[in-house]
Image (cartoon, rainbow over all chains, first blue to last red; front, side, top):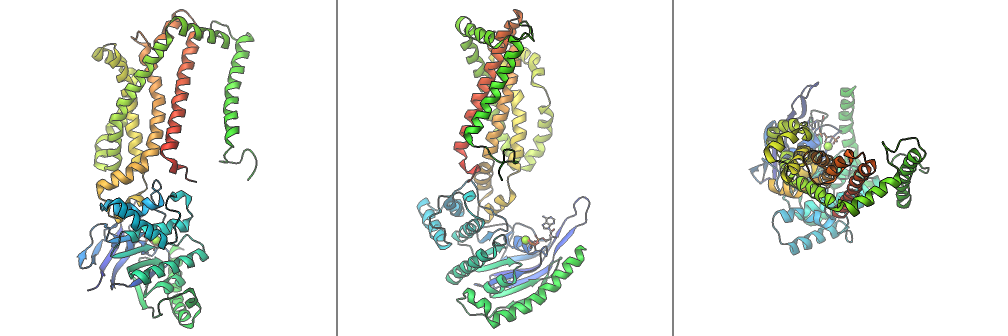
Length: 262
Length: 262
Ligand SMILES: Nc1ncnc2c1ncn2[C@@H]1O[C@H](COP(=O)(O)OP(=O)(O)OP(=O)(O)O)[C@@H](O)[C@H]1O
Ligand SMILES: [Mg+2]
């Protein structure tokens, strides 16, 4: 059985004063198998976040439905862990307590919470920062904490919305390797939104390209690169081929977006 | 950026204190010049020396300590009552929009009813005893507090709430463990502001039908045209205000160290 089925999901945001309704997402179909690492690639404003938020249950689709393990998604829940595009750590909690948050809500005993939290914090390279507050962390450290927070809850699927979007190029590459390493170890099902082509290819088992707004899935490309992958794979010929193809696909859409705005 | 007047640039703590003291010094110097220099008649404005002498007299001969005690007790009783009602109601209004829709029209209306205008009515209802004074302060503070707290709770970042939901928090969990801690520092800040206003109401309440209290003393002093006593009374109010303010700020800094972050 497929892990996640997105069937005919579309989203239209109602009109606000002084504007028409926004069609953010055309009817979209996507099937995700267990252990898939899917990256969703698309130009800015094409509805990537909207699609992810529908899967998370934070947004109700205008039409269509989302099935997780065969059950329809109606609201947010701990079975779908999310890392947001913006920094969403709870500023009043320490790094450790942030990671414990979901476990605590589920009533896991404190000692166990701390053990789990510290394990995931070590995994994202934040050992020694357990008692810091989010404001004392850099952006990259905050997103790693958010990743640990999502992982600690042991979700069925991870929804990652440009988690490294605000980071510099070098940090970003290291974070990609870190995430890929975690995925190679846990084999979680992942939906990863990005507009960075390298990032999309490097981590994915499948890259889904979305069209300009209103977004729909334009093509779906399996990435046949061996695991474990290291950053060196980015300079191979196979990688370059994927990159060339995706660059073409995305460029057309970006031009469309720009024309639309002009 | 260097230079003294760079926008938002903090000053070192020592200099900060020195500047604050300098303002007080300047005030007293100006006051001294106006009175000792003979620019203002003693009938209208007592000199700093006379004021201090009156103050000593008040404490030594007229039992002013008891007046202060009574006034402080009234302020804190009325304010505590207002907090007891306003904090839960404000939180409910901020968190639950139907509750807000129900109360917000009325509280906005009630907020503009001047507390002092209720004094004659309250004397009719509650006599000229303590209850009447406490009620004036309660009426003056409660609606302001409700509105401020509702706004603060309602303005908590929605992405934090969404993050909590994706981590498995229930609605109750979101209110108790996201909205409350996120709003708490600003709620305390609102309490500090409104406590300042409560002081103005207590004096007004004591100007009418009181036999004790700072306000009562000021009215008595007016009968004897003793500007020294009047000014001393006003000063004592300012001083108590300053002390509670500093105490509130210190408490805020202790309770919510995460607000200032770094
Ligand atoms: N709450 C909302 N109300 C109205 N319109 C919205 C809302 N959220 C998103 N939109 C619109 O829907 C479209 C898609 O937005 P979305 O955030 O999904 O884009 P995105 O692909 O994630 O873009 P980016 O890469 O810049 O994050 C945009 O045109 C946006 O203006
Ligand atoms: Mg987005």
